[in-house]
Length: 312
Image (cartoon, rainbow, N blue to C red; front, side, top):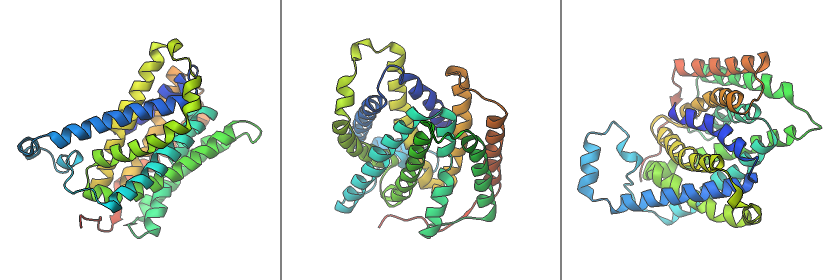
């Protein structure tokens, strides 16, 4: 729920900054800040004495201790998978997400990303990782109907909106691959390590590619409000929320974790109405209600999951 709150408010924070900063320049900078923060935390944790780890972990709730502590060494296979995750889950995903958000509304972009549980569920079931119950599929279908009510009702094939919506669809596919592709890694390593290292790899690719966008920005004229948006989006949306996502995937599975992403558009639309002045009428309310009902339905009975990958 904290993750949903952070990511939901992040849409308006990011969108508002686009009035002053090129979207891809904004994204490159926030990724660089988030990567630096992650690498700093990882470095500090590596230097943390073992007896301190044990003292903190002794009173920690089940699963919380492993969010920061990495029990296994990084192998060549781990490194290769981290590189792939960095490309798909950070370079490609972030490019499509920011590009899509710049070209469509917060309501459309957040509701399209709410389709993530359906895509993850299909991929997960196809790979034999999780078996989803009927209520899960019914809830996902109801949520998808809510997404269609809002997005399908407002599609304009002649405008920029359809391009932004299609970029958001590509972002959903990248995020689903990112989530499922990391399952073996987060069984061996902490969510902080997996998220931070893969993000740093993606940023190393992203920043050089987007360097012309960064260089074109007149940074001396950027307002304090926009700088706050950059820092908030970097530390909380890319740092804290990413870590929560991976920690949840490790503990309760990717399909159940992704269900909570359906709450994000509700938060996103509410903040967009308050801070960006985006319209919110009967269509948006109906779609949001269907999304929330779908989430409630999927939570009534947990899906049956196959055994999670364990440390070899």
